Amino acid sequence: MSNNIIDTDSEDELPPGWEERVTFEGRVFYASHDQQNTQWKHPVTGKEKYVRGELPYGWERVIQDDGTVVYVDHINKKTCFTDPRLAFAEPLKTSPKDFRQKFDGNSSALQILNGRDLTGKYAIITGASDGIGYETARSLAFHGATIIMACRNTEKAEKCKISILKDRPKATIEILHLDLASLRSVKQFAEEYKRRAWPLNMLILNAGVFGLPYIVTENDLEITFQVNHLSHFYLTKLLYDLLVSSAPSRVVVVSSESHRFPKIHMVEDVCEDSLSLPKDKYSDMNAYNVSKLCNNLFSLHLNKLLAGKKVTSNSLHPGSCISTNIQRNWWLYQVVFFIVRPFTKSKQQGAATTVYCATHPDVEEIGGMYFNNCCPCQPSKESMDEQLAEKLWTVSETILQDRLARLTSI
Image 1: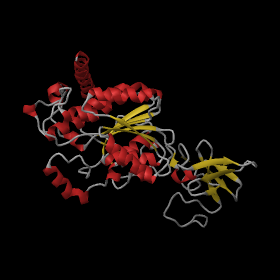
Image 2: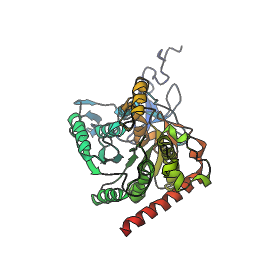
Image 3: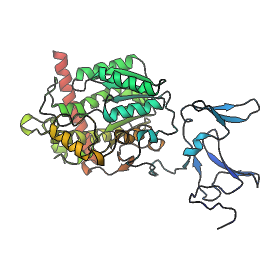
Image 4: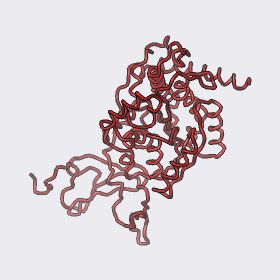
């Protein structure tokens, strides 16, 4: 080995006499104290690197009277000369799709957010009072985001808010009522949100139902279809202009690997009866599978509509059989989830891919994709069918307008 290179397993280790620094714009450069010069490329690997975005939560850059730049960590009461973002420096990308996986199924939501400051960002999270939704809300709140918990059970949401504030007293959390089984409630939620004049940087469509007996909502729709897809579709349409005006913004749709199993393969298969299943064709698992395919197709077409507006949409699988409250509706599902619990993700791990898609710089310009374990992956071929996605959008719009017309006629 060359004498001027340290014996290390890390290719990013600097030789003696070199120092890594960063410009205000976030570009990393290297200073040689021996040669008294600087360069953009790493002296060993030849790579160029950069750091993105804001300083970590609680940090501040201060320029002293003599021009010296220091970094103050207000949480730990420390001051240093090194930009803390250097710990998260990344190789310079040549394309937004130049993707390098940094996290996996063992990563937690809080690990994804390490070093991030989301102060000033507003996030709506449906179903934020339980399970993965709660962990998503908690993690984002811990890093400074303003959280709007969109929940049917506001009393339960209030308890969740108190729990988060106990751990992070400065967190900003709002609670708004949202019952996805009611289109009237969806409209009221959107109107109230707009009335408060908040921006919208993250719309996280997390809420869902599973394993229910056959139930028809007040809007004369099968409940799994309405809660898991159509009401989220309606909510997004109502907030579409706000997402665009708040850009850059992201829509994150929590789907499932169950999207691979419904018997919808062609454009001709998409109609109201194949989406909102009638009683004689109903099974709880099939209804869930259909709704999850809807999630992927909805996200795919939404991202197409948002092209060029600095708003992206992605769908994801959080993990299989995670022990949340989603299995509560049938004792057999409760038994299955209990048995597999030691082998599945925790709720913090289940929230990781949601948080990754909602916040991570790597996903900033990526949309119309399906993620699993914090990485883009291949969904079913139906989920990538743009004609199928457009047909679903059209049929969903037709169903929605029919049900809204019924509301106005009452």
